[in-house]
Image 1: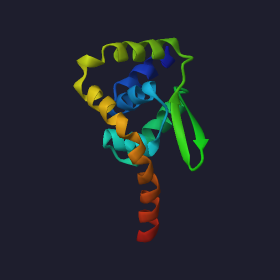
Image 2: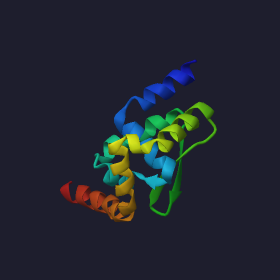
Image 3: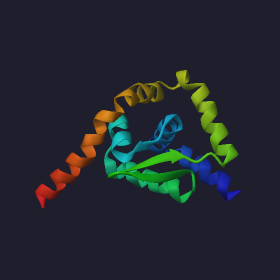
Image 4: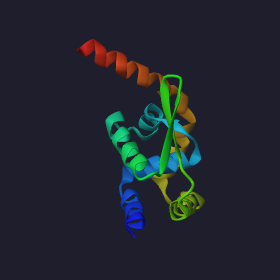
Length: 122
């Protein structure tokens, strides 16, 4: 029962839900998610960490980036996400996120720039 409750707790947070819907469309790195959602990278990282802890996403390093994708083993979780995706036209913010997803490549450079800017400030 706790597993089910945790899924709905995860889905009740707007940022995590938006991240999940993006990852339902394709695998992305933190800076891409942050850019598409216009949310800070630490907030995205914290949300992804929570999703990983609940075994709902997996991460994979590709060169200097870590990409995340949804795990599909949990039927309740995946069917709920599929239902949302099938009715996306009812959720304007999610439609906007999907349209911004087309520009995901431009956000890759922000990861490197953020690290450089942080190092310069020290």
